[in-house]
Image 1 (spheres, rainbow over the protein chains, first blue to last red):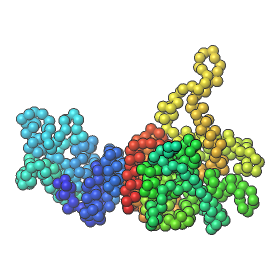
Image 2 (cartoon, rainbow over the protein chains, first blue to last red; image 1 turned 90 degrees about the vertical axis):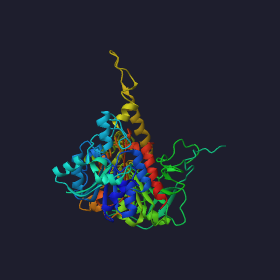
Image 3 (cartoon, chains in turn green, yellow; image 1 turned 120 degrees about the horizontal axis):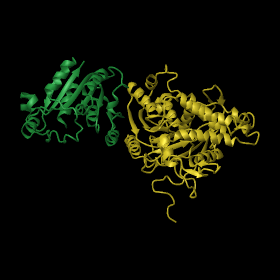
Image 4 (cartoon, one colour; image 1 turned 30 degrees about the vertical axis):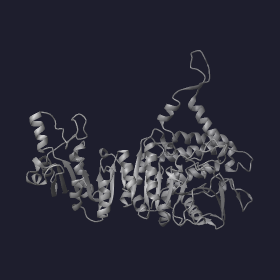
Length: 195
Length: 381
């Protein structure tokens, strides 16, 4: 199981209503349906991913996130999720606003651009980081808005977003280092937010 | 001789007629004392009768949805691409029931039938029908076939409206509702197209206020124009452009020539209107378009489709097509939004297709795959 999925499960209530933005193949929603009996819906645009969701019996809605969430009412979900996709959004800050409008709580996970490997790459090679954590070349990447954990904290402060929980998860390196110095050794951030 | 039909075809099929003697009171207040429905079935009903799927047809559809009526048949039923062994509605798994709706002209009781009270054809006096009347008659059909609960009720366009109405009228009698290229209600533009089509029929001198059968005649040209208008709205601008462009069928624009110029698209549309009006009934066309116009799923639920859908107990699958301007994607999104707001299970596919409203009948990878997987997921229940 993906480590960020494992972590965020603890923050989702039994039988709650969950909206997963960019739900992919529906793995997370299926997990939450099995473990937490949530009533979940996923938004996705990739045809193959949508088809896999349908096969899994996951509610999937063909909707482009660039369209926003204007078709969803305020506070109509207990939790709105977005895993590993915030950095692919055209306007991440507006997406966060929308998530917090539609959901009573939100959970976002994203890769840490402040990780030592990225810093090392940029500092000593002088090139945009390409690594096992960030496998894309700069000119052909879905990740157009990278940030570090610190950057995200600043955004939350400026927007008066309430951080309920924050957790660093490391899949490829020692978790203890990630806990010690998250912005340097943390791979993935998992944030639990409310208005 | 080798097998004359493709392997994924249900093959040779034959319609059957069922007679219903229990009077059916209609939404308009009138009562049909007795009526007949023509149906076709494909596949086998399982022992606990849990694998039945009802197909609801669109405006000019009928019971012949799949397979062939004879080895000489050049064309299969109207939804053969999606009903058959291994197809989206897999007849190896499901028992499929397809009917000609009440008021139709393909064998079920309709304007061409004899009114037992007068001994003459109903003609224009056939009661006006609404979508719910069809749903009630289909529920009686289910009863007669011993089907207490459909695995799914499936329909495209006007058929999707019937499927949605089923979910509200008989919530415990279907497990899944499949709504393709449909809408909660028609737009003013939709109604305008339908009215223009009706006026074409009504203003044909051979219409005789709908009593053309008594006058031993038929408003063929009016019905043909009505179909031409409808047909334009089923295709996309893109498809018409690709298929016909400004190609000429005859004549020339050469200077000095006074030829009558005919575009290919004119000839195509006239052919469509012509063949349709040979086989369809004008009163049925008026009746069906009116049922479309009158339909408004949430009318009796405070005009709130989310309140309406709260009655439903089934799960939903909704699909729409990007170039469909008769039932645009926005109409399907309204259905989906209302279902989510009503806390119902729903999956929705918005399919890229150049083929307009007709796309729901045509081959398309994403549509076929999504539809097939949804049906496969419910077949294992």
